[in-house]
Length: 85
Image 1 (cartoon, rainbow, N blue to C red):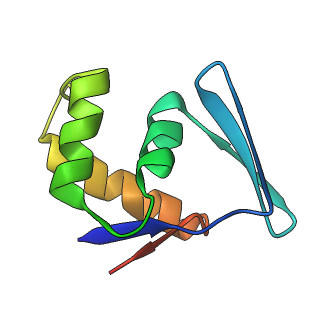
Image 2 (cartoon, one colour):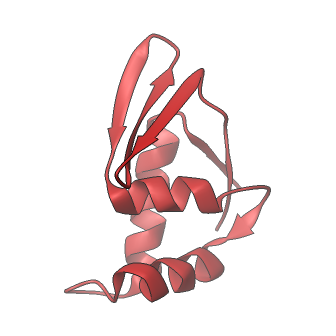
């Protein structure tokens, strides 16, 4: 899986969390989602993104970092914030 950011109408980052204006919707992003979105400059592959997130936030409590990252990318896609390829 690969992902790249889709620029929202507006994006505000404060204290590690953020909100993004996507169309007419406001989407609140956790610190992990905010970091993941920031890392999706150009096409990035999921294993690289997973390694970056694990370095910053540690391993997930259950499952693999890659599986958790791919799930988060699908959530961001569903919110209109990334494209997957």
